[in-house]
Length: 77
Image (cartoon, rainbow, N blue to C red):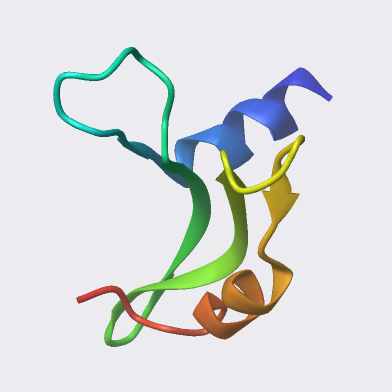
């Protein structure tokens, strides 16, 4: 089980971005967390699975499932 988790982690790319007003306290206006799992293909790496979560838009984080679905099968540019 541990080896399978390590293999999945090796193909995962993540990013986190937070937008906040300049000079304000550290409360974000918008935050976005993205995790992409990549697979090699004949034309390069393509997204095999994706998760996108938006923060600071409601009282709790919101999953952007439509965005994640649109990324699956795409080659990153």
